Length: 253
Ligand code: MF3
Ligand code: CO
Ligand code: CO
Image (cartoon, rainbow, N blue to C red):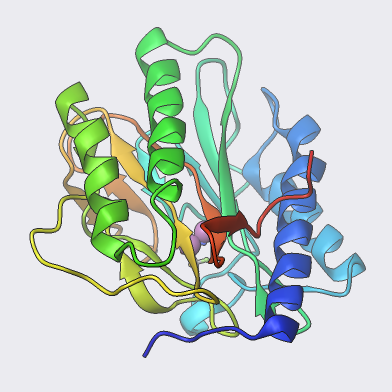
C-alpha cells in the first residue's frame, strides 16, 4: 500500500527534510582527516535532539546502535560509527541521516572526500551523484517506479559500475521504510505508477567493481562490497507533485 500524503503531512515532510539537510551541513566542517565517526555521531545526535527531533537510526529494528550511518570506502551502507574509524587521507565516506520531526522522517545522505582521493573514486562519487539526479528527473505523475530504475541503470551500466541490488530506495513518511521499493537497476516489468503526494527516496549505491555485497555477520548491519572495491551513495527524499517532483531533503543552500 503506497501512502498518499495530504497537505499537512507534506508540510511536516518538508520540515523534517529541511532539518536533515541542516544536519548534514552542520556535520560538514567536522568531516576531516583525523576525526573519528563516533565524534560525528555524537555531534549529529546532539544536534537532532536540540532541534526537537529523534534520530531514526538509533535502535532501528531494535538493533542499530547509533544515530547516523557512516560508511567508509568499501562499506556500501549502514556503517556503524565507532572511535576506531578514523578518517584518513584518500578516504571516501557516506553520511546518512534521518531525523524524525513531528512524526515524519527526512532521509538523506551525501558523500565526502578526505584529502587526496584517487581519480577513480572521485569519478565514482560524481557519477553516483549524476545517477541520483537522473533518477529524480523521472519523478512525475504518470511515470512509473521502473522509469526511475531504468534511467539510472542506463546511465551507470555502460560506465562499467556495479549497481547494488540488495538495497533500494523506499517510501518514507510516518515510517522510515514503507512502500514502494525503488530499485536502482533495470526492471523488465511495470512497477507502480507515480501519483502526487507520494514521498520516497532515490538513493543509488554504486560500486567500482561487482554489484555483490555482504552483510556483516558480527555486527549484523555493515554492508560491504564482496570484492573490497569502493562504493558511493547519495540520497534525497522526494515528493511527487502535480507536475514533477519536489526535493524534501533540502534547505535551499
Ligand atoms: N538511512 C538508511 C536508508 O537510506 C537506512 C538506515 S537503517 C539504520 O534507508 F538502521 F541503519 F539506520
Ligand atoms: Co533511505
Ligand atoms: Co538514508
